[in-house]
Image: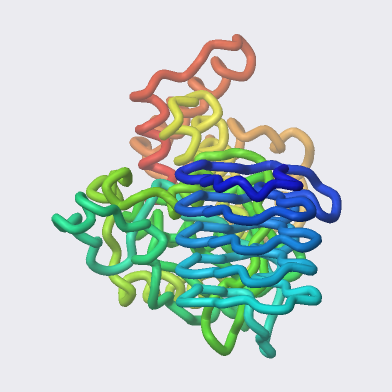
Length: 395
């Protein structure tokens, strides 16, 4: 904090975050009687306020700062006069700029995304992982290399659509938000979309609860004016990249997806996922793939085997219902003696519901599963990949 000073000062090219959680705390705070200062080209986030000026601060120039994701105001001016605010980008704060008993302030070309909005809804969201880009990726120009352009400035023209009667906003850098107040339901719905994308060949991973951020959605302007992210994950790291320069972003590594293709994924999810059983199976498959990607082969294998076993049990029940006519025989085949999966696979082979080759494959998978569960031995990459591919086809 700076106070009781009229000596010229400059605060430039600083990154400030996690500054206090009580009223008046800020990334940069000026106490009483501060004048003759320049605050320029700083990044301020995850604080109570971004910049806070108090009693009789004057002659301050606050320019070209990136102020985002603060729980209070981006800039809070109180009992101050003759200050200039220009060319700041103020995003996803609870409030943009607050004026409290000012005499004079000059504002030029500020981007403030906390203006009054009427059709606002609550929801949850996060970045898609691995990182993507919707549409044509921005190219690094000579101007970007010489003077620098913030990545945030390219994130315009979001996709606005719906999924299961809930609004969806997807921003250029792959941040996806859904209009749903229940956190658990929001997580389920977003993972349904990720799972369908994965089945269609897009390398999307399972979203975890810790990845989600609570947010507000402006359904009139198709924007996300407020977002609260806590913790640090791969997805929150993507969000932090927005305030880097384009030259610092490995944009060429991001998978490029057209807006048309992404809308089609959402339409397919709406069409295909009709009940909780399908949703749960797709969630298992998405989780198995994510574990495989992270080299957690045993966990991936067990999740895939759960899918296979569910399918076998379903086939067994269907066969017994359709093929066996004698009620006594049906009862005998569904009693405790036939509850283990080996017996079900054996009967399916005897009846002809599965071929000898399929029987051998199922028993091979089952043997590896037993080795992991009962002997504590880990699955290797080849085993996990083979069952993952099989499970994807089965699903």
